[in-house]
Amino acid sequence: MKVLIPVLAVVSALVLSACGSTASGAATTSPSPRGNAFNGASGQLVQINGSTLILTGPNGDLTVTYTTATTFTKTSIATLADVVSGTCIFATGQKDAAGSVTATTVLVSPKAAAGCNARGFGPNGGPGGSPAPGASPRPSPTARPGAAANAAFVSGEVTAVSGPTITVKTAADGSQTITVASAATITDSATVTASALQDGECVRANGPKDSAGDVQATAITITPAGPSGTCATGFGGRRGGGFPGGGGNGG
Image (cartoon, rainbow, N blue to C red; front, side, top):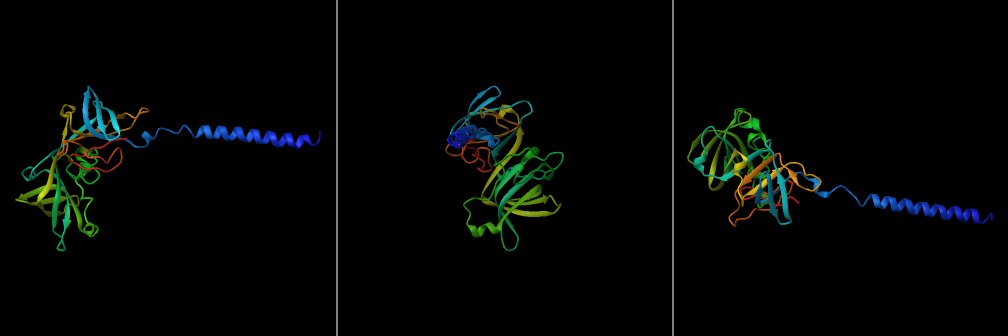
């Protein structure tokens, strides 16, 4: 009998250990939904049901809802003629050895009462103070590594325009002159309402996801589809992608 006591003790310990491992394993099989790790979604608008939007992307359909508090921004193709004194501008391009900037992408927006630079207009901001990820032009990701050192961006209020030459008042109250390349991509961004939504457009919605993975949009950016009639992929709640024609899947 004295011999059996240690044996029973060992068996009991093994049983308890096994039970503990099972409980621990079960706890790790129910993590929070991965879809909640990133806010927002983007894709091509395929259906409008009242204040509910259905977007489609490579990973399937996405549902976005908006309210009267949701802000809307629309980016459209523009021309050099749309760049006039008093508007806000964000341009990217290359700077030569003399410091002259040649812009290859230009984003134009109306000036708000607070001015251009007070609204977060720049690489990580958008007109009206609401983020418009992807809407701000960025240097081409295919640029050669050596060219990155010469990359430049200029943001501020347009004070003068003479042909392709634009003078910009920058945030530091300085003045920068840029030359817009003949093949530059020029877009115009403006605050709109939900009535601007149309099937086929590219939509980026910023906002939290609920337990079902649907996005409750606080801000929506609308851009035209690309030349092929589709939206580029690459964001899905992460930074990336590009406009116009930017879009993607928010999976």
